[in-house]
Length: 162
Image 1 (cartoon, rainbow, N blue to C red):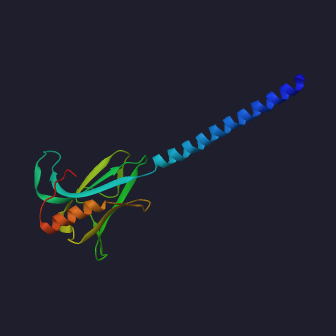
Image 2: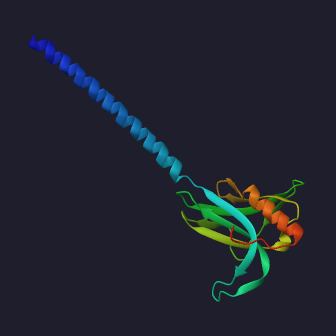
Image 3: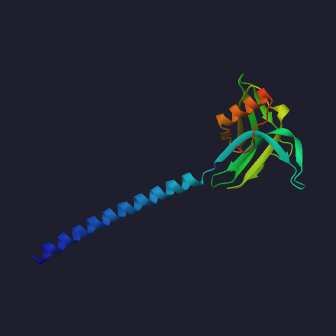
C-alpha cells in the first residue's frame, strides 16, 4: 500500500512540474516577442508650416518654412537617407535639406526638425515621407498634409504648435 501512494504522489509532482515548465516557457517566448517588437525601429513624422530660429542667437528668420519633424520612437537608431513627397497627380519630388546633411543618424528618443523653403512645396501636395537606410518609408499623417495644403492654398500661416 505504501508503494501506490509514492507512485501517485510522484505522478502528481511530475504533472505540476510539467505545468510550471509550460507556463515559464510560454512567458519566455512572449517576452522575446515583446522585446523584439518594442526594440524595432520606428519614426514619427510630422509636417507643418512655421517659423525657424537661428540656434546660436535665437533670432527669428522672418519668413515661413515648411517644417518636417522626425522623432525616433523606437528602440534602435535609424539612418534617414531621403525626404520626399508626392502630389495628387502622382508626381514625385525630393526635398533636399539646406541645414541638415543626409544621411542623418537619429538615435532612439531623439528628434530633428528640418526646415524647407515654402516655395519647394507644391499646392497639390498629397504625401510627405521619410525613408531610412533599409528602404522603409515613414509617412506624415494625412491631417498634417491637409493643414499644410490648406495653408499654402490660402496663403495663411499655420500655428506651429501642432
